[in-house]
Image (tube, rainbow, N blue to C red; front, top):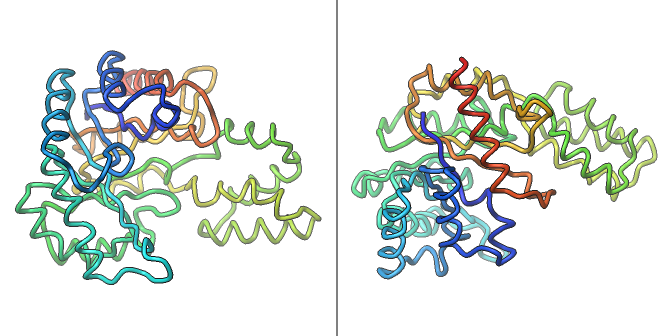
Length: 325
């Protein structure tokens, strides 16, 4: 397996205007955090899904100059973009088609799509994907997982269509072993009481799906006298951090087309603080995955840490684990 970066991990650097899109590519190359490169279409390309000839030519020039490898273009479902209604399947197909064409035009072999597309829409897009030689990868992100009902619907469709252009993009948020301590430090600094944090963590480690546990936590917190303003600070932990076993990914292994190496922070030994990378990386490597994993730091939601340094630390950890196991 090979390493790379998703520019989504550099959201703070980009939105702060300290770095342009081209600067991010240059820094990815200079810091050795490529060669793999994933971008989010609507985040990185003005006017997306329209990709001008000028932008495509400049992008390919920069990729060649910096010796980067396009790995995945993240596309959106946005099924509720129309005020007051959900898009029909016909509208969803029409919404996805130019995004897949954009991936092909820019040289990305994979388009990361979202649950909101729906299995019937993706089924209708397979002929276009095959024509353009772009694989469609469903990102499996917490609270979903390999055997979540949403994913099972896609698995059934995949089994029926049997196209090599349909695949999976595991996101390691689904297989966390705990809530990131750095996130708990953030909410603690905002004044969230220790008793409420302990209650949330106890419920997170309990049984049941993510939303069931979230509702249990809210009921217990309200019964204990906490108001919604306080308890909502911690509600995020249930849909954002899944607790499935790493080996649950094995069922999907033959059709994995890309990986989101989600991470949040590191302990004193340089290990990821919430996700069991020593279990995950050998699992994928030994399972035959030879594609790219994008380093995806999502601590930018609550931290102003230097994302470039975080990605460097993540990849150093990954190389160390792969060499030792």
